[in-house]
Length: 179
Length: 235
Ligand code: SF4
Ligand code: SF4
Ligand code: FES
Image (cartoon, rainbow over all chains, first blue to last red; front, side):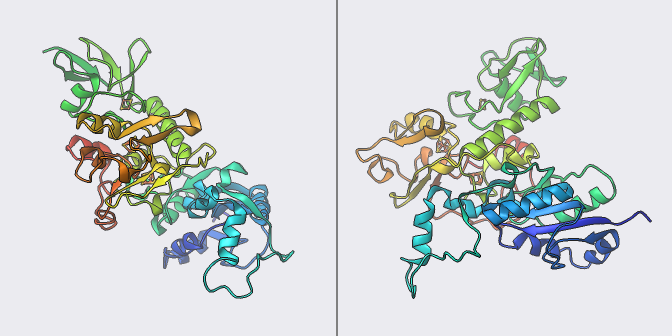
């Protein structure tokens, strides 16, 4: 049997919904682990990427750490995939893009109803926010995109099995949607 | 009867018909967004671009059919051009489909699905566009406007002229004909054709969103070519 493909996944400015949807492949995950080995991923808790065949990125880029992680994935993954609406166009987090960042922070941490000890978080450990949220293809080259909010388990399954079998991945009409 | 051919198929036409009209009558789908059979062609979205035998591109919604024309329509090359045009519409506006009341029934989405559009390809503009929620029965979210001009044409036809398109480039926007510039002070009412014709989620009559569950919406399982030729559409 051919060596297993290595697969890494991460969530940037996403909600982990894409990862949850990925897990909706249910028992097919037993077949998948026969064919791929998980590298860096919230599923393995491995913290850094080693050279991989496939990287799945959920979420857009909203802070400096997202940029760093995304570049690490690009440097290590032969095939990098934008997974879900947020990775593709910034998604719902990018709805803040029309509002100045300071106004967003004030509304959330200072002026919002029921706030105690109002202050804008500024711990040096927190990654700096970018002024706007960006889709990942504006930062690194992307090889494939899987639309959907989230893409269904069948989208993940079809895409990964196509790649593993060495086909050019393709999704038919029923698997392409943006919501 | 006089005829043209589209991708080799014989398509009859009557004098004065456009290529689009002849195609639709013959059951041939040519992708379109700004075309509507009830209104004068606008020719702005370029989605209906087709190629003549001599290599010229024409817009099927504005060009009259002429005897013997040999037209290419459903080709890989043209569909790639159409996909790129659609992607430009997606990055020019702010289309967050998961949060849009029109999702599943939107013609812009329908065309994008038809073209198997997997990403927006271009960098997002994140243009600043206003929402007008002043009207009790109608919502105008300019983030989703694709400047198809259909509401403008429909409102003109019903003698109200509520809408116009103003500005250029990233500042282009739909304006409302009223003292305040707001919908509430305009003559628009929810039963106006103009309030119901928008192919996207830019102009919405309130209280109608999310009525069809996911799986039963217009474009969930049916390609827009089938829906359009069947005489239904998401506008
Ligand atoms: S108008 Fe259509 S394409 Fe735009 S956000 Fe709404 S559903 Fe999506
Ligand atoms: S509001 Fe709708 S109908 Fe009017 S121009 Fe914009 S997209 Fe077209
Ligand atoms: S449909 Fe012909 S240009 Fe829009």
